[in-house]
Length: 133
Image 1 (cartoon, one colour):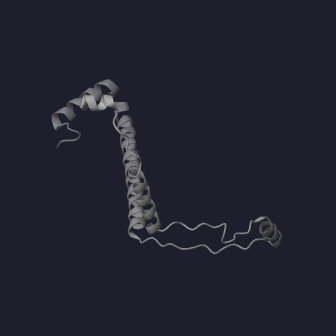
Image 2 (cartoon, rainbow, N blue to C red):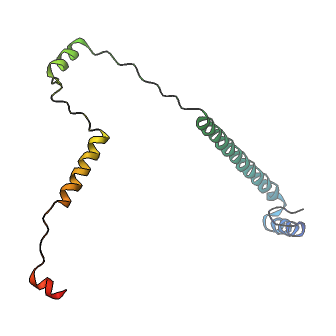
């Protein structure tokens, strides 16, 4: 019999010392209070373990379910608010709206920029540079 790493001889010695220190009248009270404390600790431990398992199962269930994307229906505005917003909203005309450039336009701009970099003037070396060479 091995409880908490303490064998039977050690348990007997602890009981004898406790009997001598506390006496035969107090020993049963101390044993009862120790038992209640251990029982309370075990109950709290089991409750914590159950809550932990429930939360883990809930998370697994959430992860396992596929996500559903839904759009909300637009809300109707009050008539007076809708009229004020329409009056304040700027009109968008095709001239004011710029479209995003296509990939071909972007590539053309890059090639044009690269060609303009190579067309820069070539600077002739100075006399000092030619002598050093």
